[in-house]
Image (cartoon, rainbow, N blue to C red; front, side, top):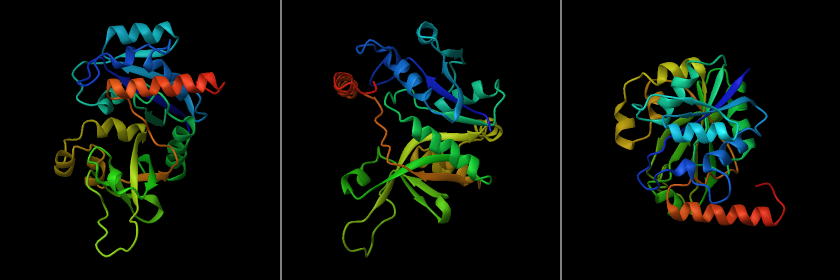
Length: 249
């Protein structure tokens, strides 16, 4: 089953403008994402989707397959869907353009979950925590699953609520990596927003509200997205530490 990874990348970011082109490590930030994604054994290709000429030229400079997309897209999913419409594949993986340390095995896990769950149209990842501060953070999305790992709900609130539970309650924290069946993705990007999606500002709820199945896979991977200058400086330090220790950059 042919799977393709697509990395949506736009220049304008409220907290970190020009993020994909930051290059203090000697490589563009988007290059780090692309190089790690290419290590996923489940992907036959990795494509960068952008609406910015500078990002396109940078991607071509380091040898990536990059495609220009419309500048009117409201979400990265819409940008991914535009490129997916041009492809001959069965599965499309939406890889966040600021996850410079993404684990190739996490991508493989999302793809394999979709391959092994024919009734699901999407798959994603989650990891377990007992940290109440992480659970209470509205920027950290939680997911509640039913039997077999099917997503019941995603929320910014700490769900499920431990009304009578003794000891430390546990929560599943969502990792924002998605694999889609291509045909579903093309229709999904055209669906109108749903009430819960608008309330929580979580577009995956659109699929659940329309009755589709999202398969969730347990992972140890904890995404470290880069949203601020401080995030980027922390990444640079981790990158240099790995290089100095002779590890994989």
